[in-house]
Image 1 (tube, rainbow, N blue to C red):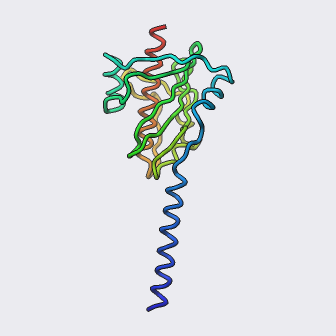
Image 2 (cartoon, rainbow, N blue to C red; image 1 turned 120 degrees about the vertical axis):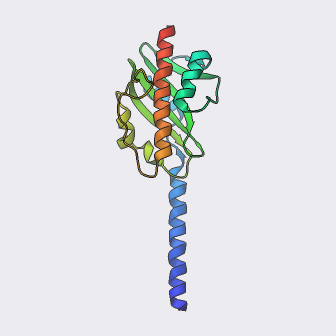
Image 3 (cartoon, rainbow, N blue to C red; image 1 turned 135 degrees about the horizontal axis):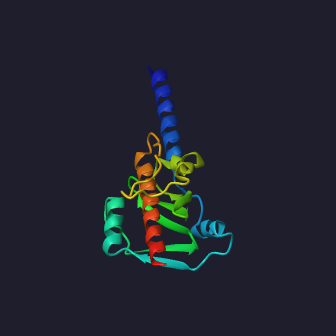
Length: 178
């Protein structure tokens, strides 16, 4: 019985250690905003622009995010038909920071810049983010492409989808002003 309890305790300690190690690895900054922008615009980053989230824009952003936006304005960087957005949305409890590049009304690239949740970080990998490539925004404010979820990362997946939709919508507003 004592031998059994000793083995059980060792096994339990091992599993707790592994769970903590996994949770610690899920969090991280994968790319800094400045590096994302420099890579996007090959070192020649344009001056940032602003979109104010007021009136119909705020209403649409609220519909997309399913809550009121936490900011009154959003910064973007653009050159011609190409724009870059750095946006944040809560996954389960913590913000996820995304860099999204839009070219001619379609997502060119989506990158998780920072992930702060204890689980669900699979959304940062290329096998997942590639699904957003060439997605556009339909008139009903949904993505034109279907995004497959990841078991155990449902809230992170939803956060990325919301931010992709928001960036596409805001880019449409940017282009209609220019």
